[in-house]
Length: 212
Image (tube, helix red, strand yellow):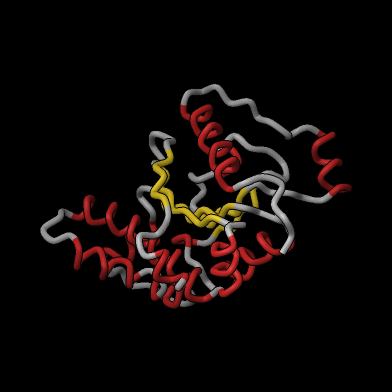
């Protein structure tokens, strides 16, 4: 495993500071010049975080976190699903690039999660994708009774973050081992597409169980 160039706490602080600049219209737009492009092409990448995010076009991660070229290892798929391909990419980031932080990021008004909540009919390759989200909806139903649909959707989006982190831990011994050694942190987060704010959810409540 390649040694990180910073700690997970330092990386998280950079993401928090960047999102604060984004929300308050104080973006710096760092590391986006031709010099930065050439430098990363020649010297390689050292992303401070790998972010598993939805593919929604309203979630532009380098803008949301006010980061630049080579700063984020972005893994995007509808519903921020931790499929085998996404998990393999997470492992590449931490093992070969030295990335110290993994963020699984859900967002408000997520279309993929909305389809699960509404039991929408899906076809073609969307069907297996939805099967990876529906367990989160079922857990949200069990935990939160009597909610109207908007509130249930929000809880399901958060539950989906937890479910995808659980999938990552259960499917990746490399991730478990890296967290045990202290070289990696995995955290959940929620992005509000209207206000631009990130709510940090922290470690999975059952992380100790997954690592045991």
